[in-house]
Length: 496
Image 1 (cartoon, rainbow, N blue to C red):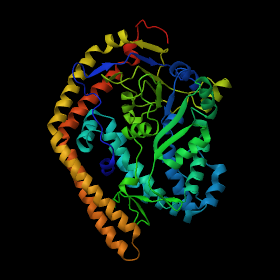
Image 2 (cartoon, one colour):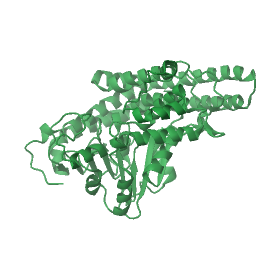
Image 3 (cartoon, rainbow, N blue to C red):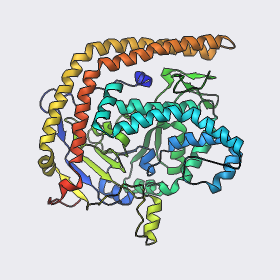
Image 4 (tube, rainbow, N blue to C red):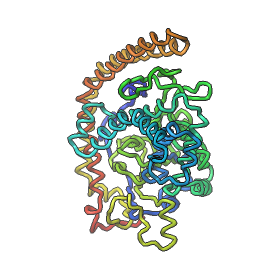
C-alpha cells in the first residue's frame, strides 16, 4: 500500500555469488508442552548474549495486541468520556468492547465512533490479513495484489488507521490509556518485569530491546512497565504535545476530514518487518556483527518477522501461528530456531494451585510431544528434498528480479519525486491558515493519488517476482509443517 513507498528498499537476502541460495539451520528445538519463560530462556538464550530483541504485542501477552487494544480503549474514552470510563473499569471484562447499556446516548456515541474509525480498516485486515492467510489460493492472490511483502502491506492499514486515530490526542492521555490496557491484561502476560530483571542477571552486560510496529507511546509504557533498556516503535511527527496525522489521507479507509496538522513522509516510520531491522542497526550498529550473540524473540504473527531469520544468530518464536522456517538464506548467520508456548501469569498461578486444566482455552487443542531437539543431520534427513526445491525456487526468484530490475529502478525514481511533491504540499498545508488550507488539501490529495498510482503500477510490474516469492514462501512454510508431531514420531532424537 501507500506507506510501502516510504519503506526502505529490501535487498534479496538470498542473493549469493555462487553455490546454494539457501541452507538448513544447524538446530531446531521444539519445546513441547507450554513452559515458563525463564525455562525457555535457559534453553535458548546463552549467558554471553549481547542483545535480546523482543517484539511487543502477542510476544508479551497471549493473543493480545496492546496497540490494537489501545485503539479500542481510545474509542471508549472518546465515546463515554475519561471519567465515566474510569468508573466502569471495576466491572469490565477482558473484552475489547465497552457496552454500558445504562447510558444509551454515550453508548451510541461510542459505537458510532468505533464504526467510523475501525469498520473499514478492520474489515480490510480481516479479509486480506486473516482470511487470506488460510488457503493457498488466497495467499497467492494476496501476493498478486500487494506484491512481494503482502503481510507488511496489509498490516500497514490498521497500523496507519491507529496513527490517524491518535492524531491530535494529547500524548499523555494516550500513554495513560495504554498503561490502563497493559495492566488490565496482566493475567495474559507471558513475560513480566521480574523475568526481564532475571534475564539481565543471567546475561551480564546484555541489552534488552523491544522493537514493534505499535505506536511509540505504547512502547514507552512497555519500557516503564518492564524495565527494558530501549524501545523502538512506529512514529509520526509530534507537535505541541500530540501526534500529527499521517500523510496518507485515504477518505475511504481513514475518514478523518481535514486534519489540524499532517505528518510528512519524512516524519512517518512504520516500524514493521525489515524496517525493524533497519532501526535496530541505526541505533545499535554492532548488533548483527560476527561474533555478537543476538537473539530475537517474537510471535511473528502471520510471518511478519520472518526477516529476523536473515540477521539474528538465534530466533525464538513464541505462541506463533506462523513459526520460523528451518530453511534460511545461505549467508544468513542464523544458527538455531526455538519454538515454544510460554505460560501466562494466569496459567502459572492456576498450575501452582493444582488446577489440572490450567492451560488457557484460547490455545489450539493439541497433543504436545516431549521437547524435540533436531540437529543438522536429522533436519537434512527430514527436509533435504524440500531444501533442494527451495533452492531452485530461490534461483528462479533471482532471475525474475533481474528481469524487472530496470523497470523497478525507474519507478523508484518516479516515486521519490512523487514523495517530494507530497512533502512540499504537506509543508504548505501546515503553514497555511483559513481557506488556503482547503485548497492545499485538495492539491495534496491529488499528489497522493499520483503516488498511489505509482505504487499500484509497481505491484503490477513486480507480479512475476511476487509469483516467485509466493512459490518460495509456500515451500518454506511446507518445510516447517514437516516438523510437526506426526513426522517426528518414532525418531531417535538427542535431548535438548
